[in-house]
Image (cartoon, rainbow over all chains, first blue to last red; front, side, top):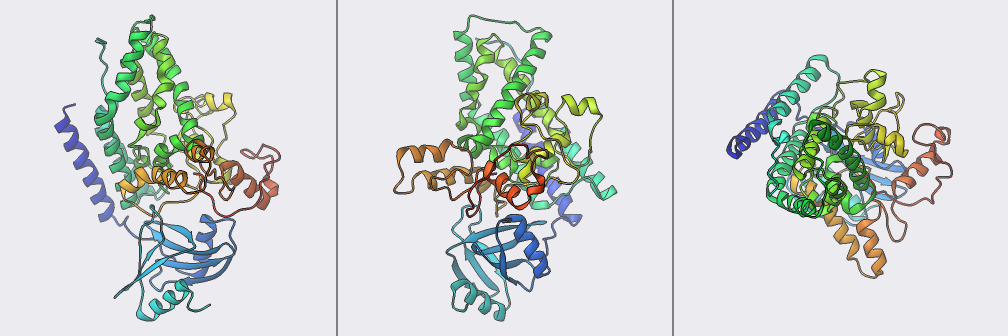
Length: 131
Length: 323
């Protein structure tokens, strides 16, 4: 197959499939709609951990987990969730929430959309300002 | 000097890949069963597939040069009859089994292969989520016996392409179990769902490309369990859809681990080549440890498929990196 035709076919195919999926509603994010959902999803990622406290974001896109193994973040990742335990986190304020840098190449920055009240609460938990 | 030419079947199959993805997606939407699709996940998989083709075009000369070198050395030439092609296909599938097994049991090769397992979905786009860095694993050396036995390098590449082509259609949840004889001999969607499962039971199982008989022969076969649906992805799932990060994350991980201060040379080497999850201080989990942890939580599963090994008990620790 001529290289030009191959490139065209691949480009049109990829773009077409992506547009089709988006237009048919397949870009919806997973909703962490309750503490129970957060616990279940966390257990899926970290089955050995024992969850002690959960803080779910009001927009249902993330949850801060405090477990027997330490702190962790659970967040919507497409139609699923992903999770990361962390010892240190760099927290940056934004008008609409926070950016967390967990020091991971596979999750370089996680943007959280939080109300001002939530932002203060999350920041305090993340930086250890409150127990 | 080699003269022989076969078609590049993977490139020729690109229109078929697109068509079958659309058919599978249409089936899922129509029937509300048979799998899941998500835009960014699928886009990442497709871009990984495109990158794989591009890296093959850019770096293919390395493998080809190695094969030609071997072809010059060997005094054997089995010819080009269809019988020889068929034999080459079968033996190449055995070669694939071992490359694939190395791909899960040595972190150096896993660094290349991990991206294929990095989706939490299992559909036909997942089949195209292929490596960009396969050349750097040096697994082309496992093809050396074929060429030294007299199979032409072009034939070896041709049957390798057919092998990859076969594996496309088995990346689906839209097909359940096939008739018994097919499941007994061939790699099927059911067998390969097991391979993509991150469930402890399914870790490092069903490496086959075309013929599942290799797993049965070498003790790595597990059948899909109705009460343990495969959950797809990595033990430690990624938090990015960025194809560059997907393609290179494990190589970065190797670098970070092997260059940390205070390690012996052997420990640095082991971070490169030991099974995924190996760590010098035992703080991570390899697949054996993950299975042992799971059995500790669910002792009633001991002796069931995938948990036949006795005495898999490991000390507790934090986290797991195996995939």
